[in-house]
Amino acid sequence: MSADGAQIPTLDVASLRAEFPILARDAYGKPLVYLDNAASAQKPRAVIDAMKNAMEHSYANVHRGLHLLSNEATTAFEDARKTAAEFLNAPSADDIIFTSGGTDAINLVAYALGVSEISEGDEIILTLAEHHSNIVPWHLLRERKGAVLKWLDISDDGEIDLDAFRAMFTPRTKLAAVSHMSNVLGAPAPAKEMAKIAHDHGAKILFDGCQAGVHGSVDVADIDCDFYAMTGHKLYGPTGIGVLYGRRDALYDLPPFRGGGEMIDAVTTEAVTYNDPPHRFEAGTPPILEAIGLGAALQWMTDKGLDAIAAHEATLTTHALEELSKLNFVRVYGRAPGKAPIIAFTVEGAHPHDVSAILDRTGVAVRAGHHCAQPLMKRLGVTATARASFAAYNTHEDVEALIRGLHKTHEMLS
Ligand SMILES: *Cc1c(COP(=O)(O)O)cnc(C)c1O
Image 1: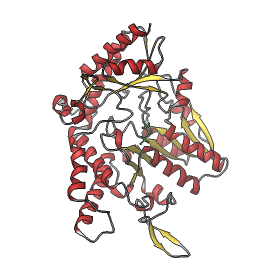
Image 2: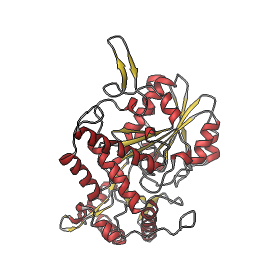
Image 3: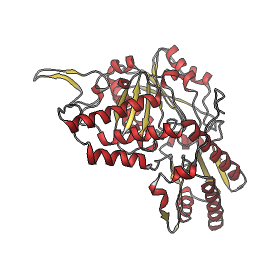
Image 4: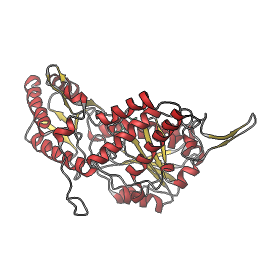
């Protein structure tokens, strides 16, 4: 049941899997068990076909064209923007900026806000659970503008204490930049409450939604955030494309990030005036095919049902956590309620890289390392973990393959 009491449709996982050509291949002669979805998801036929079709039938540069193919490409590109707006419940397609990815979206805000709003001594609040993509752009502002980074601790499960968050704001706080869902611990952040706290203190708030956008529906209007970043390749879409949602007034307040064609109003040898958002932030030829692919991916997810996908993933998470808790040689990091299908773990006496290498030989793909979250690794007292993460196409057999692989790992390494 969903929050409003409606029955959530169940996902037909077998037929859904058949939509992903890559899942038909093997790994070392064994069935492929792809559990590295938090790093990047595989692509359904709908996405592959949309990009192929655009290249084969409707390809040209967008916006400036006065011919058939350019008009068709422009329509497909702008339709993708509308689909992204609907996916996030943004008030208008004009609130959606296409970027080259999640990292690029956050850098855009950091750079532009740094120019317009950040002076020496101004404060930016981050949490210890951020991805490097939501840390390093702010370190650059620290280096360039003298901004002060303030770090909110999280619980061992990755949860945020709202009182502790509130207590971090001062009159110098300009922005909170927070992951809506950790890519290691999987804990969801109380986004709406956090946005209200930031606004009550006259600060803006950005959410890194690179994981949250994949595992449930996001409503930026309800959250009432200033900025929301997502990345295409984790949303079953292509690489090279991301989305930055910005609240209308927040976007109009931002100066340009990059200069080039399409982002201008008029250019003379003496001066330049800029276009309105979103075009102000899309200098040069945009990632046309990638945007079309992302539009197809978001439509595909919506058609399958975001709640149905999340409900299926939750059963996989529960199953995996249950089975992992029976393995006394495995330690799991992060068990927050409502946690995403992202499970970080270590195996006693084994380096995560060795765990991942042995699992790989059983056909099971997981990630091992610091997951671009070194401050979080330090907070958890580890240098690295392994991480299994599920997507809509994963099955309970995949969970069992992971558990079998871990037994084998333990036998080999102990
Ligand atoms: C993957 C990820 C990013 C980076 O996105 P890219 O588009 O791959 O650069 C940022 N934050 C989180 C939480 C992520 O999981």
